[in-house]
Length: 370
Image 1 (tube, one colour):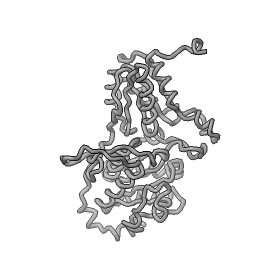
Image 2: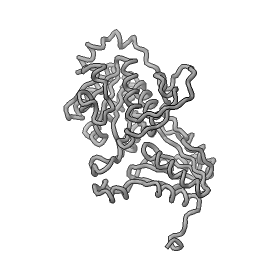
Image 3: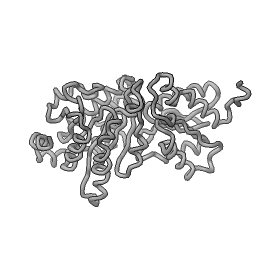
Image 4: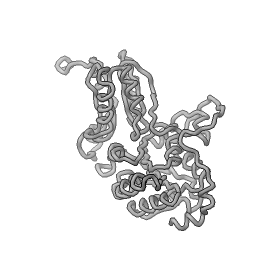
């Protein structure tokens, strides 16, 4: 497979192609009118544009070609770029992930799709021991520009083995960058940044967000658009409590903030976007303003993303806190299959609202409520 890619792309192209670094956008004037696109289309267009701009970029994974992707993220790419750059693989994550890492060693830029990140467990040795550590172990002589992407976290009714969030797992590893988009803007800008980055990037999408539509500006739709890795976005400004979240939980946090606003609580919602590196500066600046913090994530609570955020705030902004930090996470159990139990195992909007009220000392004592 690598030999085919080398023959088709040619080593002359490898040295001649200019790849823009993440965040390098030339000054342009854009229309302020916004249109709506789905997260699915945002990811598809980002892949298309990066493959068009750089012949070293190729996509590989199960059903990414003929079937156009299990979630249609790669729709139209096989027809446009051919089977040498959109490669259908056998059901062997360890095998095709290893091939992808080897291709990255040679200077290509593979995008490896996992049908779900739960299946990345089959390939975790290549992701961590081969991709993440090679730059350090080679004293900077070997770069591994590879993207591992696919749906992560809970979907609906797919049970314990297909519902796990891997944000904290991969964020634990030096040498990896871990991104988790929420909106269409996030999906486009962060995937482009990931593909252009010289290091391995774990790109955690969410199945339930693929069909969601978000407004995007003309700037976001421009082919040069790219978001910086390691920078969070303040989705909603507030002054009473900070709520951090990523992926699908950003939407829940925004809904909770709307509920809280009707009760006189102004919540600031931070979309983390990047799990590693983590934008500690934005988080701490917000906490120093609001003096309260609620962290939200789908994953298991122990050793989670929220725990890392709590520690960062304790180390850098402890004296600014007016209340204990509240941590909202998934239940500390394998994901149940039954729909009613599944809902109880994943954070809900009401959980975030209650946590924010506790932080603001506005919760109703249980004895009174009874």
